Length: 120
Image (cartoon, rainbow, N blue to C red; front, side):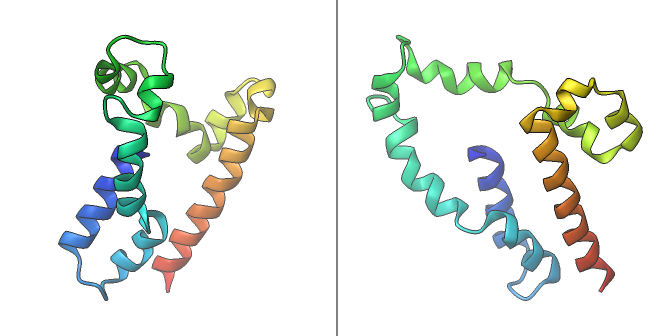
């Protein structure tokens, strides 16, 4: 969230005029991100912050590289939401897991919002 939200919010603000239709719809997904991420930097990201003192690692700074590299590709994770046949291939137990069940509901709602916006 930290990285993606900042890039989306910053690039939207820099590249699109305030009254641009794409900026208006993208703002729904990024509003407040810059301020929230800036404020959280002091509690979560810096060496000696509350999070670094609570983590059981010697080199807290290395987590900024290690964690993102170890995460699965997000597109691989969410590809099931956009494709009904791939969704059907997921084991039933995963389809019912909160990440996937709620993710599918959210994906469909957001897809409807965006499609409806551009259909205007």
